[in-house]
Image (cartoon, rainbow, N blue to C red; front, side):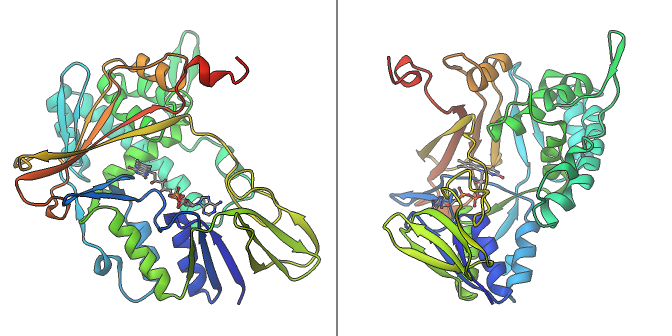
Length: 397
Ligand SMILES: Cc1cc2nc3c(=O)[nH]c(=O)nc-3n(C[C@H](O)[C@H](O)[C@H](O)COP(=O)(O)OP(=O)(O)OC[C@H]3O[C@@H](n4cnc5c(N)ncnc54)[C@H](O)[C@@H]3O)c2cc1C
């Protein structure tokens, strides 16, 4: 048994903590805020309740697996999971609308053919078949095996099997999502469907690898899910699983660094308040492993490199009078009026984009409203992370 410190109580850390505890280790989670769940937060007021982080759950199998491996009660016994159907409604720049059924390739193909024109469904369906191949190649190294020390396992060969595309005298294969959209989907609305998956994560489709095609594939293959009461309920369930497995929590404890004492048997974390948490490390010389919030690939910490995300998210919470109309889609995506303007504003030099892609979430969930005559609606848009004003671009000006 080892003593293990886990930094942060986000979903990734909670899942790791529960598994480590089941493996027999003594686990302490240090979280700088006063609660668990990380991005899965909730805002409540006057009987309304809103998820301020993700509002939908892709790939619940990951959580099913976590619950099976960390206790007796399955996921479904701990949260109320429901499929969202239609998976999403899309409104495109030219005014075309389409509702995509949940987890049904045939249904999606038929809906696209009807709304966007004959042949579009088949093109999207063929794309999903290729995306599935990318998923088959990436699933094990990304989700089912320990982190690789390098990513050559994926980089040796682009996992997405792009269709050869003749351009002037050369034959090329799409290497980015934008190229997949332009060369294989060949329809601005299908392109918006695909590129929207990258933009929603703050990624530029012009540089996002083609293998990110797995994102729409996952949605179509495994469905879109909602947790009744809001996604925060999932965080509660995972937190309670940790507590049941005797994971200890220290809230309000920001970790400012971590080290591994390689000369002795112990390493540890350093908290902002000066306190320390000890953990067992390997023998050897003491080495400082860098700050905990980035660049922490050193001796004692395993973490992400400090890379600033290109974009941020703007979330608007609407507590509305009037009940939710019958048949309202849970998720509507109103795509940007002008793709180039959106990409330029998010990843280029443009000051702003007046009509960005907006996602509207309207869950059919009585737990979110004070009574049936009100509705809790969330609007979300990906926006440039830092305002591009002269005062913020140069501190010496
Ligand atoms: C508005 C919004 C919408 C999203 N929508 C989707 C979606 O639709 N689909 C999807 O797949 N994903 C979505 N995401 C992303 C998803 O929520 C995150 O990828 C996921 O929750 C990240 O989990 P995490 O555990 O890695 O990190 P986080 O949730 O960021 O948790 C990190 C935790 O660590 C704590 N911490 C950090 N540094 C320290 C330190 N030094 N000491 C102590 N504690 C520390 C933080 O306080 C935080 O609690 C969305 C995110 C947001 C914000």
